[in-house]
Image (cartoon, rainbow, N blue to C red):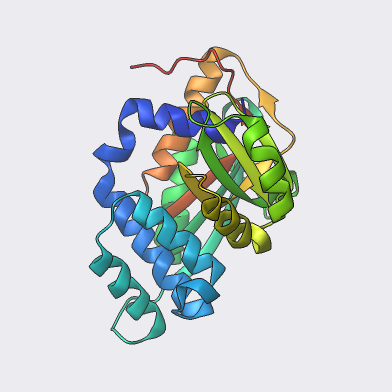
Length: 247
């Protein structure tokens, strides 16, 4: 199973998403604000904003919070100015890590990221050291208990998807970022209900580690994601289907 899907499943099992709901809301509000600032406040005409709003709705964020975040981005309400930053580095066992952040204080964010990496068996690298391993893709996930790969394969490809993969607990429909919204719309119109939908960095070159190093790498990812300014953490860590996280 891909690291992307497996890590999402592990977080759900640990209850991390519910436990950190307030922090997740804060991160989503930042993303919505920046997306609206860059591409405008019309959700249907702004793919990045639409993706952010979809994620916010999936987390049951109140509509008022979403609307206020959009207004802050478009300048209709006073808001904080955020800068987009990307850090590249390595985790335990040499696993590649991409860290995307939105911040109002570059020095604070850089210090937090560097400290978290160094305290958890990782290190910060130079620009370009691991980014070549990753591609940005649209990822639309469906519960494999509800749908199978064959059901989704033809409709997804006809809608413009690149591929459909069975990742165990989920069926993933992969798209180019620009066609993400169109594919999602087409599948929703045909009655397919996604469990999640996002545009994220994924790697085709995965790294396998021993159990203890997987645990250390996941602990590092969890602590990076817990930083206020960090929006997403992507890795090329391959997590076996039989891996069980520590309680």
